[in-house]
Image (cartoon, rainbow, N blue to C red; front, side, top):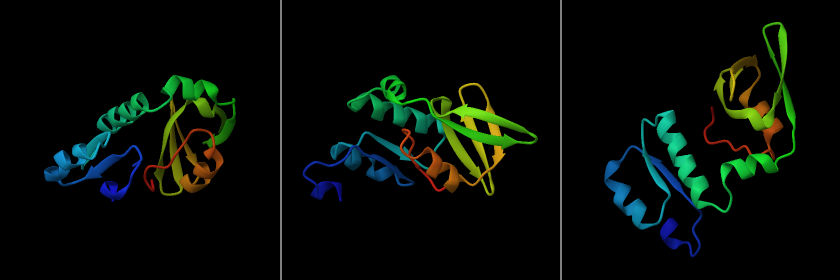
Amino acid sequence: MLKTLRNPPKTILTTAYREFALEGFDLGVIDYLLKPITFDRFFKAIERYLNTSNHAAPELLSSLEAQFVYLKSGHKYFKVDTRAILYAESLKDYVNVHTREKMITSKYKISDLQQELEGNGFLGIHRS
């Protein structure tokens, strides 16, 4: 598909097939991730994307208004600044929200959290 586009988007390919990596880079992809993908390797690919795009990560984060999401964990409520959230991961009906300081586990569906964070610089990269 990338071959057919005049102005292809910046792309990170994820696959289990090592033999197509060279062809991917010939098409100008930013990175080529082989499964199983570790978080460190994924994070490097995202950094590479941010370094090649029109904005750097700190500029993107500082341009966002302060907005908060409220998470209940146990008997406590946490007011979390969306700019502090690094990523969230699904655990069925629960979600782990990883911030710069801590991880919060809350009874929250990932789809609901994704809707709440939409428009705040977040994007879903996997169903979970």
